[in-house]
Image (tube, rainbow, N blue to C red; front, side, top):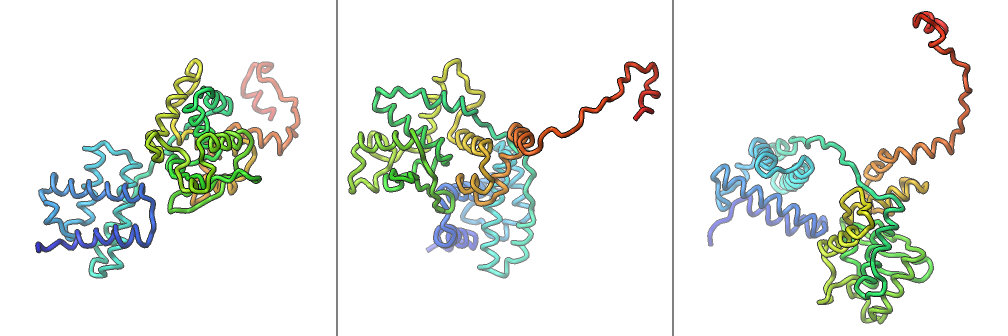
Amino acid sequence: MKNTTDFANHLEHFFTDFLIGCRNLSKNTISSYSDTFRLLVIFFNDQLSISPEKLRLKNINNKSIRDYLDWLQKERKSSNATRNQRLAAIHSFFRYLQMQDPKQLLSCQQVMQIPFKKNVQPLLNHLTVSQVSSLLRQPDMSKKGERRDAVILSVLYDTGARVQELCDLKVQNIRLESPASISLTGKGHKTRIVPIVGNTVKLLANYLEENKLTATHRLDHPLFYNQRRQALSRGGITHILKKYADLVEDNNMPVKVTPHVLRHSKAMHLLQAGYTMVVIRDWLGHVSIQTTEIYATLDIEAKRKLLERTFPDNIPDYDLPDWNKDGNLIDFLKKF
């Protein structure tokens, strides 16, 4: 049997024992990590002429990782955000490696010293309440397929769910009895309970009844599924959303409408309604409240209304001098 390299051995255990077994990361995160190291292997093969079967830990150092990151941005046109995502995966591997093989400690620390690039905070596009309302009115409720789509759009907005969280929903995650709620499983397999009210509850109740999903043996069935009764994919839900966004009269949508735009919209509307950062954080399933606070920095209108509500205009209407009455600006300024 052909010998494997130290890099190949450690990388295999990093994925199978650590990421999946210990950290219990989501399949999307693991897929992202896999892409990072697949591209790293391609970089060494194509740019440094080191084939995968000869790639060893001694080849992967501070300089080669920096060159790899530069290659990602120059040759593959990766953004700072993508570059940082790749670097985070590499940092994670070397943190794992230094615990498994202390002889690599210096090299690991040198790699982990590579800094992230500052990322310009992207504008979090979102829709107004009236724009969301226009979007949700688009499905034709006389058609069964579009009745399902109406439920998808309503649940996506009402819960502020990530698109993968919606894909993973099963019938057993829905509670229609008061207080109605949906159980969402997010990043890190963390579960949170999100309330649903009003028309969303009615839509879900009708949908479950119409599609015969109320029986006990259907509890583990995907909530939203295709003709093969398989859970809808992220791409499928994105396509459904785009279909109805394109139907809005006069295309009254200022941005490209994606599932994440609806998530941002829900967060902004909760903020504008006066909900606290802690409530919004828990609603959206953010790990850190710092992530949630991004919305507060964007909503100038909410700040203005809060200021008016909290602090009445108690600044006196001063009888200020009018500089136009003075022929000399210097004389005018002396009056203050």
